[in-house]
Image (cartoon, rainbow over the protein chains, first blue to last red):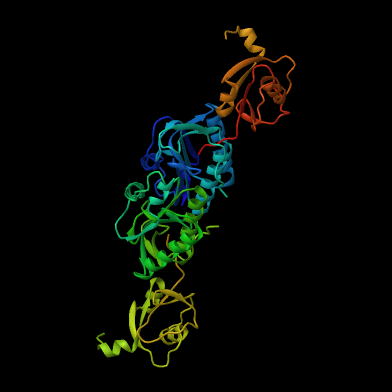
Length: 163
Length: 163
Length: 86
Length: 86
C-alpha cells in the first residue's frame, strides 16, 4: 500500500518532430518499455494518422509537410499540458513527420498511457484534434493529373472534421 | 479515379481469444501489413488494456480471466458489426486474453482502421465500451494480504466507468 | 451424467460462470424442459433453495435474454454475474 | 540582407509559411518597428498592395495572436494560412 507512493509521481511526455520515416508500432513498443511504468498503466489509447494515396477524388503521389520550427514544439507542449490538466495521465508520446512523404507513410502518432481507459481515450482524441486544428503544419500534395502523366502541386486547404 | 472502385469493397474483421500472452504492437504491425490496405487508411485508433498490479487499493499478484466460449466470439462479432453499421470502417482487430495473467500482461486490444479519424476514434471507443459492459468475461484476482505473505482470490465486481 | 440422445433432445443445457459457478458448485448441467417456458422459470428451478443474492444475467443460445424470454428443449441457457472483462 | 546588431534590436522579424510564403515570395524578413504597434499593423505593412485574399493567421513569439495584439522591437511575428497537419 505504502508502496504506491514510492513510485514516480512526475508524468513524462515526449514530443518528436522528424524528417525520417517512423514505424509507429516500433516507437510505441520502445517507448512503453522505456517509460518504466510496468503494472501502473491499465490503458493506452493511441492514434496514427497515415498518408492516403487519394484526396478529394484525386490520386496523390507525394506530399511535403512544412512546419514552423520552434512554434510547432511549443504548441504541442501546450496541447499536452492542457490534456494533463484535464485528465489523469501517466505518459504521453507525440510524433509528427515533416518533409517529404509518400503514400502509406505514417504522419502522426499520439499515444496516452493512464491507469483507466476514460482518461486515455479522451486525452488522445483531445490532443489529436487540437494538433489538427492548431499545430503549425501545412501539407502540399503532388496530385496526378487526369491524363495520369502530368502532376501538379497544391496546398491542402481543409482538414476533414474530427467531431 | 475509376481506380478507387477496383479496390476491395468488403471490410474485414478479426477477433481472437487467446490463452497465450500477446504483444499488442507486434499484432498491430503484422495485421496492418497483412490487411493489404496500403494508401487507403488515413486513420488507425486503437486501445490496449493492460493488467495493473493494483486494484481497489490492493496489490494484485495474478489474475484468471474466465469467459463463455462461443458466446464471447458471437458477442464480439455483434459489437463489431454494430460499429460497422454506425461508422465507415476498413478493418477491425480485437484480441482478448483469457486464462492466467500476470501484471503488465496485455488483456485486450481493439484497433480500427478507416479513411478518416472521426470513424476510427468513435468506433474504437464504442467497441471497447461495449466489450467492457457486455462481452462475457470475468476476472478473478489473486490479491496480496496486508501481511504480504498470504494471498486471497476474489472476483472483480465492477468495472471502472468508461464515460 | 450420461444421457441418451432422446433425453438430450428433451433437455435444456444450463451453464454457470464465474462467481455464480462457484456459488452453485456446478459449471454445466442438463435439465428436463418439463414445465419450463421462460428462462426465468429455468432460473427459479436451478436456484431454488440456493439463496443466490447476487445479480444474475441470462442468455439463451449465447445471446442475452430477459426473464420472460422463451426457452425450448435443445436450448443452451447460461446464468452468470455482470461481466468484468477488458 | 545584412543588418547590424543595433538594426536588429529595433526590428521585428517576420516569417511567412506555406501558401502565404509562396504568394508573397518571401519566407523571412526584418522590418523596422517604426509606427507599428499591433500585429495587424505589421500585416498591413507587409501585405500592402499584395492582394492577399486568403485567410491569414498571426503569431507573436511563436504563440497565436489577434490583429490587435501588441508587438515590439525584437519580436518574432509570423503569418500563415490555416493549418493542415496531422
